[in-house]
Image 1 (spheres, rainbow, N blue to C red):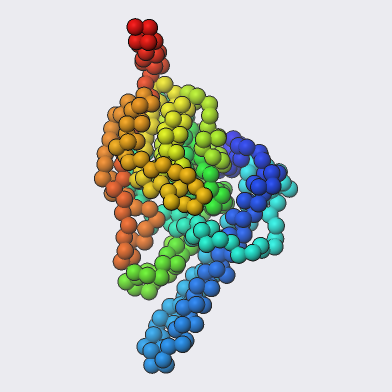
Image 2 (tube, helix red, strand yellow):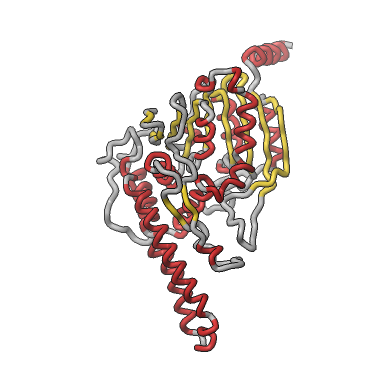
Length: 388
């Protein structure tokens, strides 16, 4: 992976963008971003139409609300300007894909599906979670325990941090991987979602000044607002310069399915997963892959809930084992459980001013793949038992 001015450019591991299905998927995500503004304004227009149908004395009492809807439209316009910047160079964000093969059409296709619009809105909220001062509380709860554990497992004073290879699957907008690299470790983030990859490319490679841009992450939350400006609040990003990495830092991103990208055994000193393992159709596959790619003696650090993203989705298959069962699977593969906490209070892209709060009781654990001599000893014992 090439490093450019301490920034990262995601690499498409499977160079298949000439494939028609891949191209269609790429175009679909671009069009979802482009449709953000008309889709969002349509929602406001519907509310305004109903408001204007109310009795005149009701409308008079709601004059402040009518002004608020104008502010909501202004916020949507501002978000759309950021979205245009995000997708401006999307056609050639992958360093190993020729721009001509990833060319983005300029014509808007038929209306994108609602699920894609929800992902665009989630991407805007993710900017606040990962790259704003408003997201500090969430990052302290979700990312800091992982960073602290890495510093404990690989003390900077007792190792050459750049020799320690750390993988962050499901890296999202890259803040956790960035913070790990900022400590001096060699860190690679991996992400499958093009929504996340487009936005992370913009932040990590195009943002060179602190708090240069603003978004309105909560503008689509019409309910449970104590004050009108809680919906229209502006959030500045990035709160740090993504180019502010040590000269020795090795930071990179890969684009693609975790299970397809990482197949080589005994490569990583540490795998750090945050809100990730429940993104699998089969969580056991993820656990097996993590065990395989870790070096003997390597560490897996995990924090998150079990939302199971594919559960109950049409045309998707999924298993949803409890953490109790997952724990048995982890031990069954041979991991040694070194630390474990349940009921860890975490949130995900929450508006802390909202009257409705969603909080996870997440699980945190640290596992170790047994050292090579232990693996050999276990295999020898297993062979002797079979002979007996």
